[in-house]
Image (tube, rainbow, N blue to C red):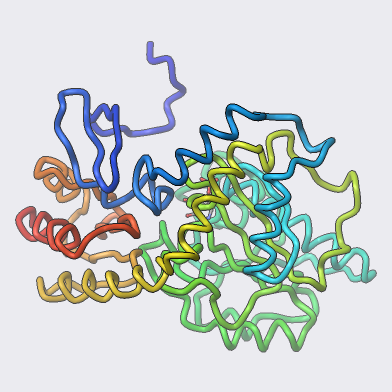
Length: 366
Ligand SMILES: Cc1ncc(COP(=O)(O)O)c(C=O)c1O
């Protein structure tokens, strides 16, 4: 019997080491990692700045709970507030960040004495696997067998979302670029912002996959009321965040929400080091430049490409699974984004030659 519950279809690859943009298996073979732990390892593997920060924090203090203040957590939250303009709640994962955002939205309207039972989401969205996040995901593929889910969520085509916002709508959750749904940018953020403003509805961006520079933009415009972050946020360690606009800073009060490990000092040390590196080296701009190269190389293969920056999908006329497997045999790790798209989520530290290597592996595998 497997020691695991049966949740993952793992590929036959046993990884034991990472270095920069590459990972090594237990036979000694190195692979170019073009998915980075699904958009987590933005700086590549074993980045010296992140490693040093983690080592120092492990030596100093690993965990004390949120009963106390911890300087590294304080510095990390301040860095996020300096960047995004509002206070944060720190948690451990993307799903947990979206759950926190849901509670923030509900409490905001509760405090205003409003009953707003409806949450709008985009079709093909993916917001996570816990019950609240699964309700937001609104896709039979992920939710079948797990009902009842929290109600009130309506999933609509992109072009219908802004129009549907009304006095009953508590919030609209959207990924500025859908990840699991095929690296598809959401094209109507401006219209959504205007509709939310007109009706007192909160706009929430799930930037868990596309955020922190990966899309080639750090601050998606127009600004949302709330954003959720995870994945790359912890520099390789589990960390998520609800980032509230300043107008929502007083919605929660002590006892409303919490998380034992949320903002763990070691994860915060890794996250802070990673964020500082991204900001100081302007790696967001690097993502934008490499993204243009990646897109045009994929388009030169005659493929339809979607996404932005270093979050791009090549849409195929065949199943992506066998292509992903062939690319792996050629030494390049990618993953699917839906059944017929190959997703590229390379490290921000990739070289032009490595981008070429990824695209050549796809060309040879088609
Ligand atoms: C956009 C988005 N939101 C939420 C999640 C859930 O994050 P986690 O797996 O950390 O719970 C994911 C994970 O793929 C995601 O891509």
